[in-house]
Image (cartoon, rainbow over all chains, first blue to last red; front, side):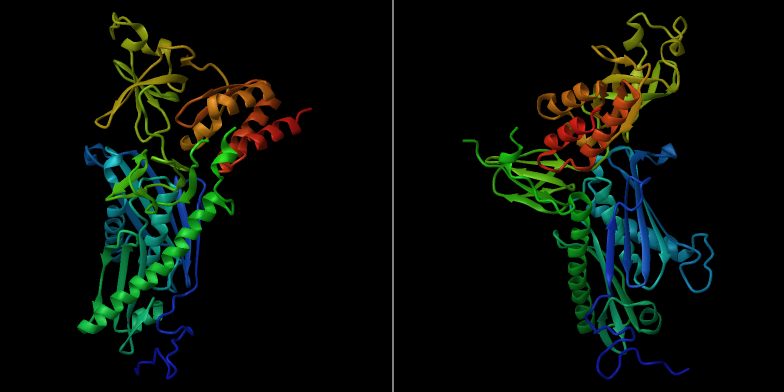
Length: 248
Length: 226
């Protein structure tokens, strides 16, 4: 089978984006009433809900950490999230992604503030379109902030990769499958610390550098949206009151 | 004149101020930067930075009054759900006195599973669950009332300056309000009064960050009066 071209002669990708453009993104905080914290994200065709429970008591008891919280993450894809029905049982891939999401979020949370407790993060992919782990991380960190858990910084995820030999930002499903490399990155934008970096495909040194910087740049754009989503949930469009007004 | 206090809305990771300040809870200092750890309203005074968070779990503090539900009876005390990551523990000796003995005293005669109690946090550190006591005025079993839950971080707004807000709600609705720092409020009064007070609490919860909240609540309470 001949491979189709993923970028045309004008440098436009299959879905009409330029090499350094993100897909349309929408975020919402506090979508679920019953969770302690929650967020919903639409990232291109991805639709993902993240929910946080806790801190709460740990079960089973032997997993308790005496000096810090225990973070549990579950990344799960709904059976209807892909073209062909996905078996709802956790797959190898989902177990692995759950682990990397946990490790991407953990550095942001001040675990020592909640000793002997568990914090649970559920990432539910309702519709999947490539880059769902980074979108899931972005949504989970909003959900954690919504739950009021002490955090050093938000965590934002973004991916880049190589298609048709060119470094591009934010691969969608087709580009991910038919392209030659994919690099999901998660980081804390204010602290400037990387919490997740995965790479597949073969990169030259130059390409690696370019892809990495591109993912960070994309992440910073997503961070601004994250920020807006949090502010609009908690403060709407009100302004902080000046001090005089409050002295009653 | 009072030094002007600057306020701003912050999210985790935001720099509240740079310089040298005394800092309150939910703030981390990095070099000379003060970083917010929660979503909330930051206040930067002349020599102090504070953060009033808008969400979060209840973390017990000694001397807090809390309202909890008995969930288990052990040989030496009660386990109490205090709407927190940690369960409260009420030792039987705090209730029956020093001469308490598990063989002569029946714990369920005092509090049964499902009973609601008002208690005080007697001791709490990070290594053990909070210890409660019911010694003090207004503490003990709550026989009746309507429970309203709100975010524990917004309880100070419900109480208001020197109890201004809560007194206003109590007098205008004719209800009695028992407030736990853990975000549980028990209302007793006429059905109409309870509905009104509960609505006022909802308003406070939704608009905790709004400036002239007291005026708003006042106009709601007097406006709907019949």
